Image (cartoon, rainbow, N blue to C red; front, side):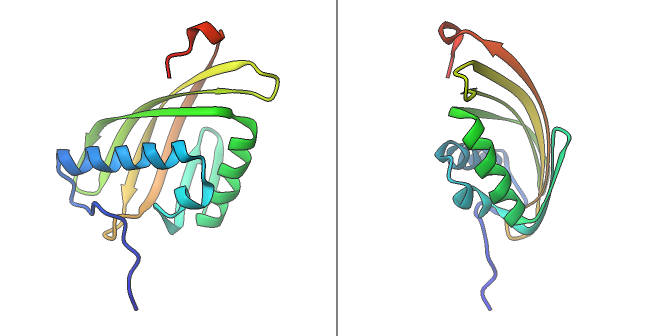
Length: 138
């Protein structure tokens, strides 16, 4: 049986940690919940603000709902720190709600990967700021 793998694999170097962050940014900007979910282990555990997500199927459902509500979504991630199998990132993203109001979100995520490079844990803290269309950066 072939094990599912998502490169680069831990232990991370600065170069491979940055690559992992860029791959995550690219995937999330695709707004394709199924594609994004494939970077996570089947039994992944998330805390997204006050919401708890358990398993890859919950990730797909969560992201499908997220991108129905967050229109014109655009994300930028930046490596903050890393160790053997953990990465911390800071991020910001912008989106419009269904009423057309623009928002910018700021936050931090802590990621833990299994040996096959799939994200086993994701803990996100996020704050939102209402912005004018003219204040958009992304």
